[in-house]
Length: 124
Image (cartoon, rainbow, N blue to C red; front, side, top):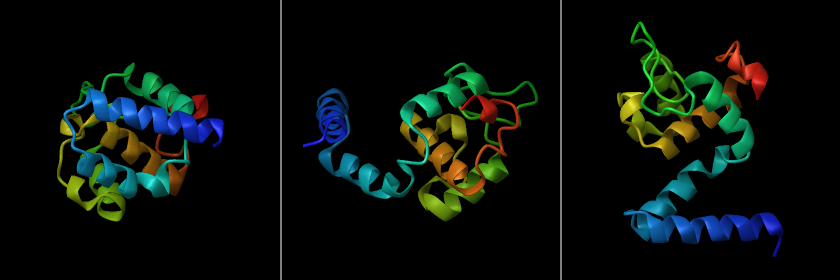
């Protein structure tokens, strides 16, 4: 078994043991996000998140337009959700669980690269 696969397995066991999620919920998350998991590494995603919101999943811009860890506006969020995770359409990004915000950022990056993040995208 590769080191990466072992780390993923260990992370899944830790997630199951430390979360209130059921095995079915975790399986659903893994299955529904598989297509975007390799878009950005955890380190790259962390750099983007830190730059955009200093790792604050509840961040709101001064204008109130940009929300969540990756500072999505609602129109962009809903468009990405419609294409990748339809159950997240109309959810305010700050009310989405951190793992869904991460997956939405990966999905948007898969479509448009760093373009939606003109400053922080260069730090990835």
